[in-house]
Length: 244
Ligand SMILES: NC(=O)c1ccc[n+]([C@@H]2O[C@H](COP(=O)([O-])OP(=O)(O)OC[C@H]3O[C@@H](n4cnc5c(N)ncnc54)[C@H](O)[C@@H]3O)[C@@H](O)[C@H]2O)c1
Image (cartoon, rainbow, N blue to C red; front, side):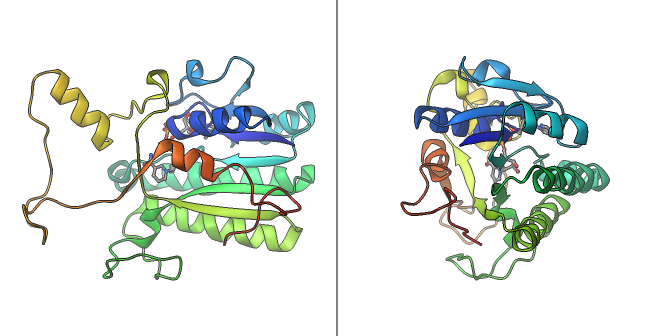
């Protein structure tokens, strides 16, 4: 198969691109480089520079590279910014996904993996969140991810596309230094930034029901997350079993 990874020059996308390449898959990356870094990509990986909102570019990339599967990571992902700029988030994350899915259907692509987020749950009142926990996003970012899941699921059912929506929790770590998360608003880079400048890390929140009042969150290591995209379950005819 040949996989097109949108947002593949980003923190998570570059790890997925590497995991798939190392597993022997052909990989091409489409990224507008709004926050992506081309140097994160393996040398052998073709980079198509542009947006998922550009339908002509998508059609051309799918045809030129004979793409048979898509992993869609390209998105805006800052919660606070999504509250200030909801139209930007709906355009990039929901309209962008619609354009991409239209191109996927037109190209006859049969496998689609979508980067969703734990933000779809909002503030669940249970300790253990499962796929059955009700989704009640509390900000536009989470809303766009939930709407994205609906779009992916409905399109997959209507057009016979095998789909999976992966709800990532907080992602941390790096497989190698050049792949590190450089996001200025993510907690791990923020902590290291302050520590290397000789400053104390800043922890927001002091009234949670925890021993020291700071919040407790779950993290997943980036390499575990990357390999969750690959290899596919044995016996899955299209290369990936539908998860949602
Ligand atoms: N990092 C996390 O903890 C986390 C948690 C849950 C979900 N996610 C999701 O995972 C995905 C990747 O996140 P990340 O942490 O790697 O972010 P990132 O900003 O490092 O990567 C996003 C990539 O998408 C590209 N991009 C953005 N808009 C684009 C567009 N319109 N067309 C083409 N490329 C575009 C950017 O240039 C960047 O390379 C996102 O969908 C995000 O919502 C991330």
